[in-house]
Image 1 (cartoon, rainbow, N blue to C red):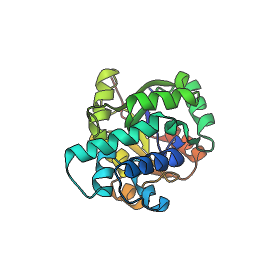
Image 2 (tube, rainbow, N blue to C red):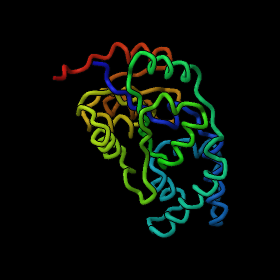
Image 3 (cartoon, rainbow, N blue to C red):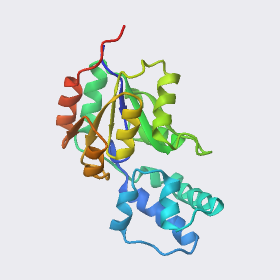
Image 4 (cartoon, rainbow, N blue to C red):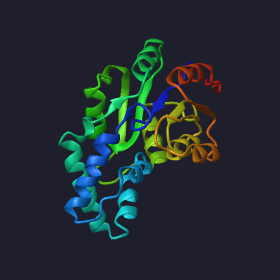
Length: 222
């Protein structure tokens, strides 16, 4: 039985850099906060948004953080979500895997509605069985919980599958759910953190990702 494949979105399928930077800048300007250099914001692509603003705003005050998140999403939904590019060869790989009978899912920390629109915008909707993201109230910001819920809601066999992503959050989520994990190096996460987090495989190209997916041994399921 082919394993279900769970793909992170930002930094794995698409490069969201322009829209992410513009949306963070929009939120910080509205709050009259200093605007960091673009390169200083790159490590925040992928991690949970509330944690990002907690660091950027130097506060744990919930109302302030929620205001920043709301402003960020205002800009994101005003076109920022589509200011992205599909990584080289990912479109072809996803199509090939779907044609081969793999069940494809998106597991992202991005708001679910936003992620669904992005997948549709880039023409990927027919390839993915389900797009699972964080809910507006903050539920499933922990990706391990999100993956667990995705498995429950879609009748997937626990411990059978592969989590693919570009940050240690993806690796942690996969490992806590008993999945094989593949770390990609073309995103924004720390390679060292993913390796330290115990990723099972590490790839540098989409073609190598495809080869690895097809060769990963899976537990025998009854």
